[in-house]
Length: 218
Image (cartoon, rainbow, N blue to C red; front, side, top):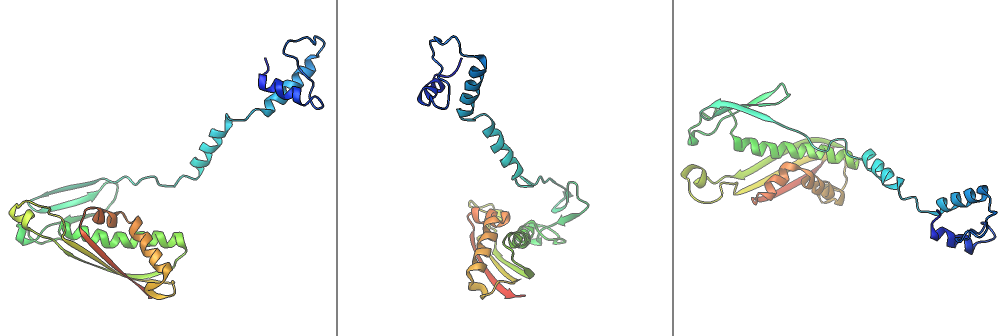
């Protein structure tokens, strides 16, 4: 049975479509004419079915290559020395701590690694952002100055054992003209800090975080 909306349309346009009476008084209407009217009505209906599928395919085809990076590390050790390995990787590293905390100071401390991750992650993120924006980069020099209170860690006092302050200093060679005050360079820096997971880890921890970026010519 044909939709009533389609019946109304057929009555409004007698010059282009045969009129189909819902009371079926025209018993002589041929099956061919009925088929023509049905096909026309179907063409007039909104094609809602396939559209969500086409949208889904579009989203799928434009999805990022990496949705997430899985990572697992394993640590083994005694006392204050720990050897850390990364699952699926051939390399490892060792962490120790300061003699103040009873360590042997035979390897970088965990807090030193945290600052190193901030330094290196900004460089990696800068490399990614530069590719996105067509910026050519040269050498990097990154320094991190930080102050870690020990009252909570060493003496067990109440409070927050987090860093008191962290300052990132970056000098990077770029092909951006206009020096460090260039709007393009400032946008580059803002994007790096926004997209760097370790920078955001520090900032969102509540530490007093500052950074200074210097644009040097290639």
